[in-house]
Picture 1 (tube, rainbow, N blue to C red):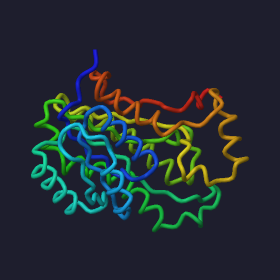
Picture 2: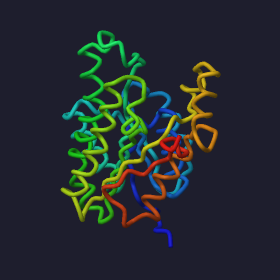
Picture 3: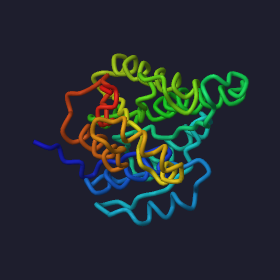
Amino acid sequence: MAVSLQNRVALVTGGAGGIGAAICQGLAAAGVTVVVGYHSSREPAERLAAGLPLAGRPHAALAAPVTDSAALAALAEEIEGRYGRCDILVNCAGTTRFVPHEDLDGLDDGLFEQILATNVRGPFATLRALRQLLERSGAGLVVNISSIAAVSAMGSNVAYCASKAALDNMTKSLARALAPAIRVVSVSPGLADTDFVKKMDRSWRDEQAGRTPLQRLAEPHEVADAVVALASHLTFTTGAVIPVDGGRPLS
């Protein structure tokens, strides 16, 4: 039996991106009040928040720069002031850049550190800032948006793959440390057919789909469905990595 998500409040970092926006829409459709967290995409985040279906209190778009711990602490205070609670945190903010794996010089120190700061330290810092609100929820849930690259070691660059592997490992550590008050789970998509991916070479996209047993890419809403399911149905799940990859590791 599904758990009602009415009156729950969620923060989705990176909420204006392709997968993030789908997650915001999925949660709002399930009755959750959503805070669309953004870094530089203020206008898209505000448009998204304004267009989400209402199920109670109004949604909001708030700055959530995940590499700035002081700003995250202020964000937690603002969420508490507006809503008095935060039940769900979805760490969807991430960064990368395409660098061939053999191009070690192309993966310079600055990019490497930026990826780790955003993709690994960022989720930790955001959870740290919201920990008290999530503990008070009685049903605190953290979902880290990972990637199949964590296990395949194939992705936009070496540092990105390493960052997602670290994120999955951290998910397990935090699930153990924060139980039973807060559940922590990773959702691990394969290549998702976002607007960003749609701009890439069609033959490359077709090749990636052809290597997947289900013969297509993930749809952003399918990643969102996994997040909603963790909140509403899979309530005895923590410390796990949930694949949304079409069986790609089988090929």
